[in-house]
Image 1 (cartoon, rainbow, N blue to C red):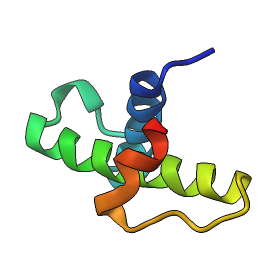
Image 2: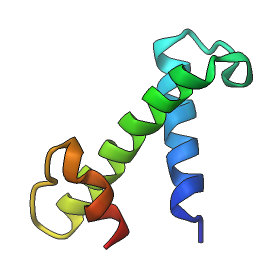
Image 3: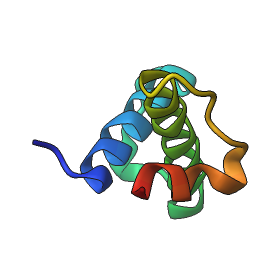
Image 4: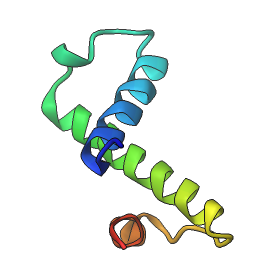
Length: 68
């Protein structure tokens, strides 16, 4: 099973590819990668919340929800 860090990285890469016309993730600036990782974490938290039958919290609570 894929760990949370790997899930975040895969989702971030996918979001980046869509937003940036499949440009290379490896060449993206680290601050931009962090923005996409944050979006990925929020998305994963939302999916986790839906699976549990509840809505995910705002982005400030996303890390706590995913790590629980």
